Length: 114
Image (cartoon, rainbow, N blue to C red; front, side):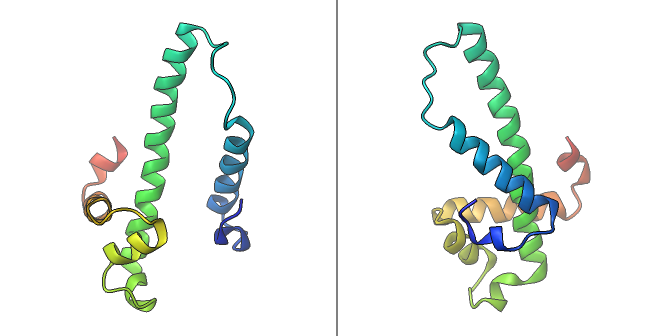
């Protein structure tokens, strides 16, 4: 893993992210022509499932940063501004992610578990 998080070992999420990053390095750029149609369909569905699970992890991190007031501690005007800075996402995307993270982690337990 090449990110700054690599220096914060100990938490299982750090190891998981490093493992995922390494695995993606290993498959990035591989040719897909040898996959059957069924494999393409199945892998597309599986990739979407894994992406949704990873999105839940990312939203949990955004919610944690928000609940800690991390943005203010690092000089950002809001969690949205902080998220834009650390992820280089568009303002609208940052707003949507923060809004969703707040919704999921402040009382919508059933939605989060779905």
